[in-house]
Every structure is written in structure tokens, then in C-alpha cells.
Amino acid sequence: MDSERIGRVRGVTFGALLLAAAAATAPAAPRPVIGISHAQSRALVTVPGTLVNTTLDRDQGRLVYVVEVSSVLGMRDVEVEAKTGKIVRITPVILDRPLAREVEAP
Image 1 (tube, rainbow, N blue to C red):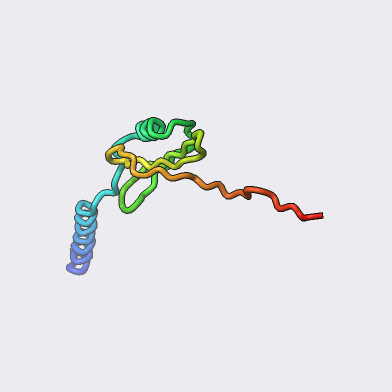
Image 2 (tube, rainbow, N blue to C red):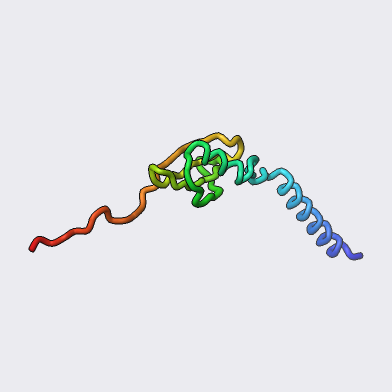
């Protein structure tokens, strides 16, 4: 083997090692600890009603399930921390619709 080819092989090998080391030391993306059904159960115990939708979002650096519940008081977003199952926040959902129609006077 000539020295130029050996240098290229060493460079490729060294580059692959650097990439592997960087991947090994990079922090893993956070994953939820509790399941979606656990989050939904916690939300429905806190705000009784009908389950509408559930999403997994990031809020202030932590993973939270946002569980939409239709209750007798209206729609509520119940945020459940995905790591602990703790209820983080309950927010009323404001629907974007007019409250009354304007009627012109005769």
C-alpha cells in the first residue's frame, strides 16, 4: 500500500471514531416514563368528563401530555408531566367563535 492510501484510510477511520464518540456522549432525547393511558386516566380523575384528544408536547424543557377533556364546565386542557404523572396545569380552552350575532336596528 502506498502512503497516500494509508493516510486516507487512517483519516476515514479517525473520522468514524470521532462520530461514534460524539454520538455516544450526546444526551439522549427525553422519553416519557408514564404511558399515554396513564396520563389520560390521571387527567380524567382530575377533570371528570369525556376524553377528546391527547398529545405529547414539550413545556419549559419537560415532556408533558396535553389531555383535552370535555367537561360540564367546558373544554379543558390538562397537562400531565410525562416523567412523574403529576398534573402540571389545567387550562380552559377558549373556542374561537362569536358569542352573539350582531343585528341591525330597523
